[in-house]
Length: 60
Image (tube, rainbow, N blue to C red; front, side, top):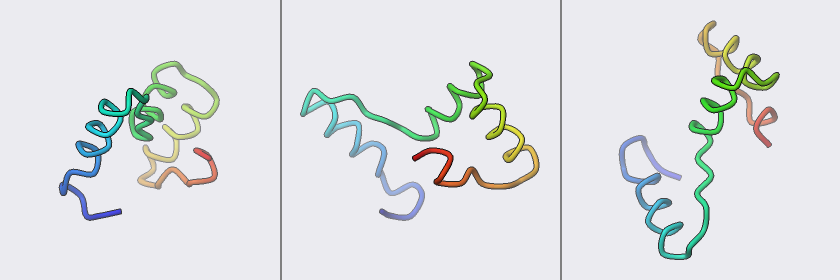
């Protein structure tokens, strides 16, 4: 948890590399679903086009 730009994702990538784990990055996951035109991706695109946030319930 932290403000934008403080390095949360960079730290997560470093930890994932150090622990030989896969990093799950939600913005990348949403983008991937939009590119693949999945049901979730298309719904997320509609929300974002209208200036709305993608709700946590869609991702969980």
